[in-house]
Amino acid sequence: MRAVVYKGPFEVAIEQVEDPRIQHPNDVTVRVTSTAICGSDLHMYEGRTAAEPGIVFGHENLGVVEEVGEGVTTLSRGDRVVMPFNVACGFCKNCTAGFTGFCLTVNPGFAGGAYGYVAMGPYVGGQAEYVRVPYADFNCLKLPEGTEKETDFVLLADIFPTGYHGNELADVRPGESVAVYGGGPVGLMAAYSAMLRGASKVFVVDRVAERLQKAEQIGAVPIDFTQGNPAEQIKEQTEGGRGTDKGIDAVGYQAQAQGEDREEPAIVLNSLVETVRPTGALGIPGLYVPRDPGGPDEQAKQGMLMVAIGRLFEKGLRMGTGQCNVKRYNRQLRDMIIEGRAEPSFVVSHELSLDEAPTAYEKFDKRVEGYTKVVLHPHA
View 1 (cartoon, rainbow, N blue to C red):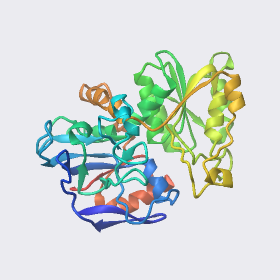
View 2: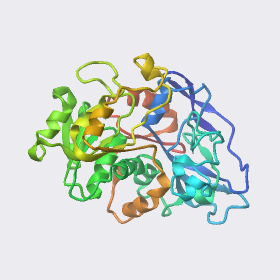
View 3: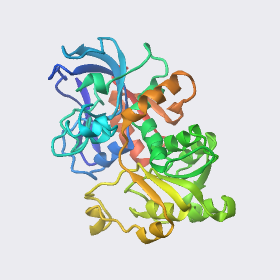
């Protein structure tokens, strides 16, 4: 089959790789109809992880069940399904507690597994014509038949639940104000989810014009951090200048310094500490890594950042972190899409064939030509 294969920093190619096969009675194989490029893929694409050439990318996958293992009980050939990016067993201590992003079974020696991602287990990515799904009864979420709302449903694999997860980590409640740092796909999903949860006012901080325009289109207040300190800009628009009730970091460790063309990995965390009012809460779904080969200094390369912990303590702020447990949210969010209560596909800027993936990666990485979210169709 054809697949998107990592060749080295800033290079992917479409190559022929081995077709997936049933390896366990609980497996299914899925003919991939939609698979999205994620900002997390760019970390590997840029050489900012330990990913080795040859890995097949793709953890945001939707398709139709092609082959069913003899132990699978709830799925049949022809079912349309979307898979969480988390590969999970469903029965370990963490899975039964709802922490499916930290499964203790699927990736021995590490809490958590995923498709097509470095250090997340042996699961081949789905930016390909087909993908194998282990523990399929647990990991496949059934969708309505046909092709309707395809670009909405594919976002259930990662970014829609992850944006919602940021709100859960920050405990966003109706009537509260929220500051979201990062206007990329996850940041826009976090802002959108805050509105779905009844937030009274949502700010989105970024510097890319297309992202800020998208934020404004959904009713958020755009904050361009190149125009001044974003925390001060936001506090000027809150009651008494105290700041927002909650804050969400949808940027992670590749944050950009204000007014300079360089990275400052802790700047978003420290900006949120200043943005959120005393006794508020922070949700951190943005990715931070234990090691970053491309970090701007030796501490950052070891995942050690200078965070204003004293100021966070002084203000009595709470902080929640960690990757999304997609299974905790995807069924409810699916039903909101079905009923027309949510249309997350507003973030999708391009729908392309699999063969166009190398160009899409390059343009998405450079944030050019309106590339905000790309969905690939391997069988188009």
